[in-house]
Length: 250
Image (cartoon, rainbow, N blue to C red; front, side, top):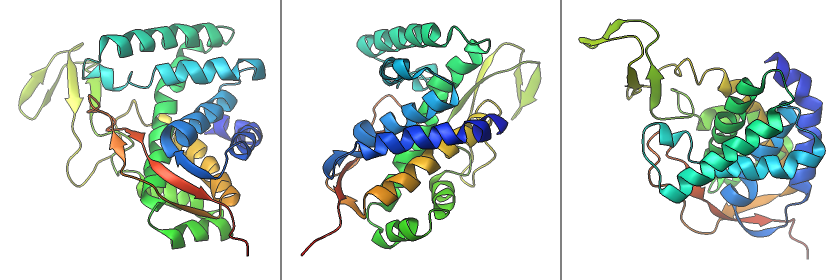
């Protein structure tokens, strides 16, 4: 949380610039809005140099299926792109003494932020009153993102590795074995490895949402949402057609 607070001015500046570059009209809120804004936000949080932002965003986009690949094999092409994206991110983050932690944030954090922002925008598409409230009360963005976040965290399955022997649901699990945590219908706390990602992902999604609402007075659906196949962990949106509207003039 301290790192998020420290990076807040740069996060706001970079996100504002990215939002200002969006044009009104038809847009895919995932590929044209949520994903690039999440990459911009994490470039700020990770201190990526300005002249490397485009490479960072491209590498992050290549790693989009990486979290789901923990449980579900991806296509050969997607796997090769993800591998290339991870290698590019390692190179971009190499100057940092926390490069490995940065790599996890770059891959999993941008995924979480993209999904949180995408799901929040999907929730708002047919709720014009809620969008109007965001324009008059920017502080409402945090509540809006939280309302769109499942109680168990941003993802629906949590691949884990046992660090010590344990027994779960009558089954003996040895240290080093892989298990998958499935949240119950009532929701539970996020798995430990996703917990550290949530504050940063929420901060990125909230800042983007505030600036989007300020930039576009109206937003509405322009087609059906599409979710990725082979995405049991994230159930991520890959398309969210919408219309971004300016003020009506007469």
